[in-house]
Image (cartoon, rainbow, N blue to C red; front, side, top):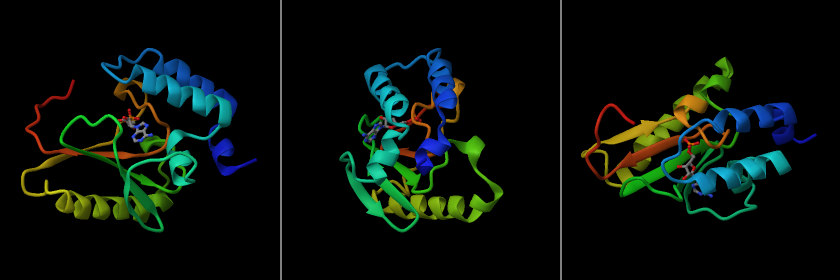
Length: 155
Ligand code: AMP
């Protein structure tokens, strides 16, 4: 059994899909459906496939622990994702021993936000976790969104 299949056994994959079925996606329903079908059929999330270079992505940063790539459906002029190479399904699945990894991800976010020109103007770091937050890919990822003024609270 591969690491990805072990991380997402079939029952858990189906539960994930059913819970997300109640989530309202203002856009990207087709994208969600593709992601869910891919996970259900192969046991690999779309982000694991990006890590394994099985599908293309606009990757602009990589180190031994993580990747950053531009979101395929950007919600702002700057919208990229930072993901760990380690398969962690969501914030709920972060282990105590992942503390250094998570700290590393935020150091990368800080550097990339500056590289992308939004450090001064400001940006939002978002980690959707679970159905109420409309998490659509069960591989931990941080959205970094900037380049426009945002409102609060989020929808
Ligand atoms: P979330 O809904 O928080 O799980 O975010 C998943 C994000 O992944 C969404 O913003 C999608 O647009 C993005 N996404 C899905 N597939 C891809 C892909 N192949 N390349 C880049 N971004 C993607």
